[in-house]
Amino acid sequence: MNGLHDMGGMQHYGPVQLEANEPLFHAPWEARAMALTVAMGATGQWNIDQSRSARESLPPREYLNSSYYEIWIRALERLMLARGLVSADELAHGEPLAAAAELKTLKRDSVDAALARGTPADRPVTRPAAFAVGDRVRLRNMQPAGHTRLPRYVRGHVGTIEIVHGVHVYPDTHATIPASDEGHWLYTVRFDARELWGPNADPTVSVSVDAWEPYIERLERA
Amino acid sequence: MDIRVRALETLLSRKGYVEPAALDRIVETYEKEVGPHNGARVVARAWTEPDFKAWLLEDATAAIASMGYSGRQGEHMVALENTPQLHHMVVCTLCSCYPWPVLGLPPVWYKSAPYRSRAVLDPRGVLADFGVTLPADTQIKVWDSTAEVRYLVLPMRPAGTEGWNAGRLAAIVTRDSMIGTGVLEANP
Image (cartoon, rainbow over all chains, first blue to last red; front, side, top):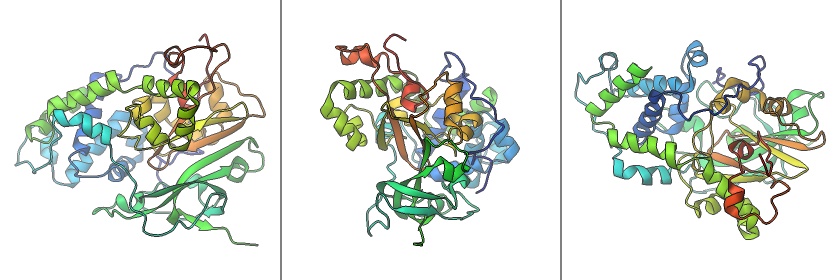
């Protein structure tokens, strides 16, 4: 989705603001927000691509004006509402008004193992990679209306395959409801800054982006 | 937000969806145990053990996991070595993807619009915001973490640290140097 979250190359946001001795959390609620999001994610009711999609789908003004963990909480509420895990009334009143769904609750004694395991994105290899390190490729001019991890600033641009990572679950279809678990070959594609930003760009700079095979097309031979 | 989140936690625990003790353990993990000190130990070991460094550059996931750091938001790791000719910088333009097992939770600036928008467009300008100036002929590679691969920068070991053991070295490795927005000094 060509949303506000797709920020690469935007201007006018100003300098990076640094906070000296920045605390991990700026208020106790942020820590609880983080933990709630991780724990609810562990119930398996949605995957990380669906959760990113929910955050991106917040109305632009809300997204831009919310702090980071506010975005998490707003998106968490949407994820749960969409699946009928809570109702709007329950969220408003802060207490159960209807029977709960049967979920796989993350228990305290399982937390360490769950965090150490994570959620690997690799999938079985069932076909050879289309591209190899050194190949010159173009990132497709595609404009998916749903979730994608192909930023606008690289679409249509020519780069070089830098790394072949393996087959990873494809976010564009992993984020749909229901989710697909299809995997595609994942590559790092490197772009010269002048390719992305024009001939006056810094010639010492390159940008490397991780792209799945459906995002990539072979460069036409002249 | 405080009331909203408290109410949400109450609701979700009463519905049996979350266990408060599990939430406490998640918070404790990232407040006390998982943080940049993990990555600093990886870097110090790479500086002092050539075999480990070679392994880290070849298979960072396995090398880092061998030190006990693995899992959520670090399932697929790649280490990027800074040299006098080449400086790496890591960003997630689309959200905030960050290698949690070795660096903990990301700082606000990493997740902010200024960094996300400008790191790929003007990395030298961003480095200037951090007070860092690289030589004009240093190559800069900016890595946009668009997939689940997570990148850890292996900063250059500063001069003046000859003979230091890994523990002493780890103490001078900053979080920002492992993202690529900082460079290191022996006596910071």
